[in-house]
Amino acid sequence: MKGYGRTPRTMMSLLLLVGTITWIMLVAGCGGGETEVETDPTATGGETEPAVETVPEPIEPEEPMEGAGMGDRDVPDYSTMEPVEYGVEDVFFAFDEYDLDESAMATLARNARILKEHDDVVILVEGHCDERGTVQYNLALGEKRAKAVRDYLISLGVPSNRLRFTSYGESRPFAMGSNERAWAQNRRAHFARP
Amino acid sequence: MRQASRALLAVAALLVVAVPTLAQGQPDVSIGIVKETAEKFDVLVGTLDVLSGGMPAVDAATAIERTVARDLEYSGLFRVGMLESQAETDSLRFTYAIRGSVEGPVRDADQTGEVVPTTISLDLVTYPGGQLLLNKRYRPLPEQMRITAHHFANQVVEILTGEPGIAMTRIVFSRGSGDRRDLWVVDYDGENLMRLTSNRTLNLCPDWKPDGTEVAFTSYHRGMQGLYSLDTATGEVRQIIAQEGLNLGASWHPDGRELLISLSRAGDPEIYRVSADGDIVRRLTAMRSIEISPSWSPSGRELVFTSDMTGTPQLYVLDDVGSARRRLTWEGRYNDSAEWSPSGEQIVYATREGNLTQLVLIRATGEARKLLTDRRWRNCEDPSWAPDGRHVVFASDRTGTFKLYVMDVLEGGVRQLTFGDEPDITPAWSPR
Image (cartoon, rainbow over all chains, first blue to last red; front, side, top):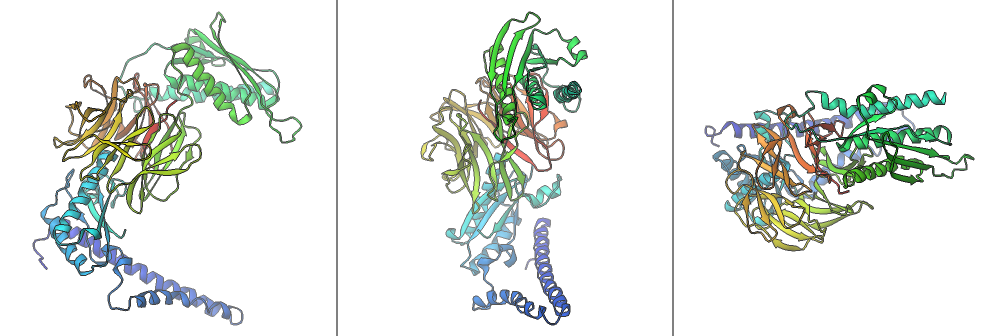
């Protein structure tokens, strides 16, 4: 899509997305590795008794395949996935603000398109703040952010009954650290599976 | 040998008592901004006579002496000396002394498993005259020595000032980080730390019901906020109200029948009065801005709260039907977390100075604004008054992690209340 209009903030969220996907792939990779490691020692460990034990083990890797087959269609079941996994990105805010800037609106336009494609998912819009300021005001500010995002998604045609919202204030920072870089990443609306 | 152990224990007791005094002398701990020196009572905490009961009775005596001395020191009303400390004793001209005796077994001598109470007699006398001002006799079980001492210390404070002490109060707060913060409670002197919730979510902003039987707090259920109440005797939790959006910042009315709360069911966070069962009694604000952090005045006829109706969060006062609004704060671009003092004369709150949050004391009339902390304390948040109207508990991240501290707002001394690696926030001081 538009490659030039992207602000660093959008780039950052893209990087986050790529990071998450990499992480998911790594986890998947590790899982595969583990089963191999597990089956190897049991295969070489003995031939008489462990032969019985090796039977239940291969069942485990099969379970995810059953789960994938349950949908009976080509697309994955989005209702069991975190929104970031199917491309719904976080939106970021300026200090002490809950208004959406151009970059946030562009991200939400993409999010809205994705959400409209998958009309079975309900998502929870979480408002977050950086660590500065008080617990209660940040909870209120986080809610203002979540609501601004929800209202904008509704204006783009996402049905309101698929959008819930909440605020975690400063309780769940994405990035640790007391500097502008961490703060900028923490002033966000995040999309979660309720 | 018994004498030697006794002396050792007495030294240990002195070290503990000396801690707050030392802490106040360190430049990085003392506040230095508030400097009034109040009149103090000079009291000598004597060594209790152990009439019988062997070492367990000696231990009990030491625990009581130490706890009484610490309670009196923590009240801010006393200069405390103990008999063994000759240097300290010489520097004080005592007007009062505490003396007494411990008698009888702390445990059943026959080891049958039956626990036998000890008899403890405690006196407050004039010094050196020896005129009896207060005598109390207790028969505590071995695990009740601290509470016995707290009870006596409260009586001493009441005899001398007319107001009971705060030695049996507790502080409830939120401990943890990330997805999980639980409510914990600790005695006002840092002892008896106990966890109250374990529901794997955020539990925040507790407030004691005025009779101490319940704590209202904000929690989450499936990502959605609600206001809940925890029975402090049974640990049972009930839902008070859970509307869409914020259910935040509970402040119990002095009569215990209602709470103030911020709800955003109408769009923006607004202040409401709700009954203890969660029925909405009255909506007090209606503005297109954030209205949060309500706190009742001790009379229950007014409240202070935060609104950003001017573009920055500021404190306002309202009456109990939502009229007669007046703006309280005119300095600072970010003021929140106000709590009205038990006397009704003062309000403590948090203000932002640069990137840091600091504590401020102001008269309820809006005059005499006074900073209580400075940047050496990094961020100081969520102040809550002790029932004596003299001490305030708050959260500060001066060590890098938010922990709780108690400040004497009259003299500026501070002591650390909680320790450990996990962040502690949103404390609330219990009633007496």
